[in-house]
Length: 398
Image (cartoon, rainbow, N blue to C red; front, side, top):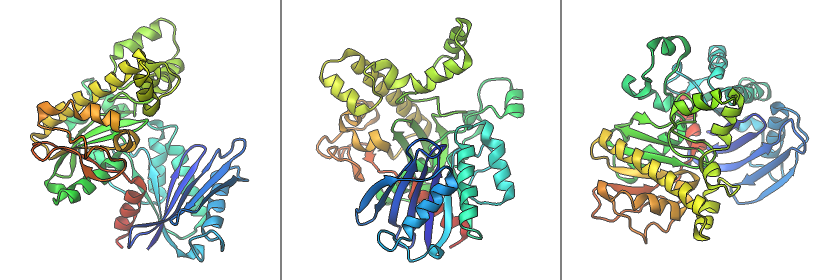
């Protein structure tokens, strides 16, 4: 079965073409700057051949048509014709409480995605635009949506509710939803296989660490708790997001004259590693280099990142009760050895001892703790697109 996976952003359209029987990626890429100046197509095939070119597109439907032209191009394509595409899987950020699993698209599903847009105004409308573009370009081909929030819907009420009057939950849906669910799901399943266990028999702490960061406590295939909340703003220290913060800080700054939009910008775009380090970058690689160069602010930012993450790992260890492993994934978790080392070296109280030689790995599944560790530490590369392809096959029953 050949499945096209789509991740539509407000000004971008990412794609991956899979042959699902072998879980083989045939081609991938992105059309960037849709509707802006100088849009571009980046295209890469499984054989490593890649190129970039200017893209004459003004909307997502144009971008999808361009992608289709490349996929079926006699010179650079991976399909003989577009008729080989049997289904399309889509990432949708927010499904609220309406969706606890992936579903086939129909008018009711699209209506529900629109209703959830108030919770993800920058993402759901764009995700829906990608779905509707596919309906135009691939009439009659089934579309399946995979929600970032769905995997976390197994949380119990004492995990997802906030200690606020219940009327706000009933009227406005104010609760913890969690994000990066597709990544946490993939990593949990892959880790279970690596440990030779069924996912339903595993207790895992999965750490998705990139520009956005989240952590999840997963017991027997179900999420007990996760760090992101109503929005992706809460929890860990991130690239530009503050993570957990006293809500009184927001009230204080608003009373000082800051507008709601200004506060939103500060918390989401100017905080985290970027705001603390003050080196003009939120990239952990740049921060670690600045630390080596003796930059005190960068050192503080990295220490805050590690401190908050270790704090959550310890809490989730207690919730799970003797978990099987703590798992690192995402750009930082998979590739930034110095940052990962700092975190793992702070887990000895939990019975996790880092094997520094085994830890010299990037984006490769590996146990990085010593054999005598009672809590294993692993690196497990994530693959959200492959997870979407798997979910699409499962929904369609093939």
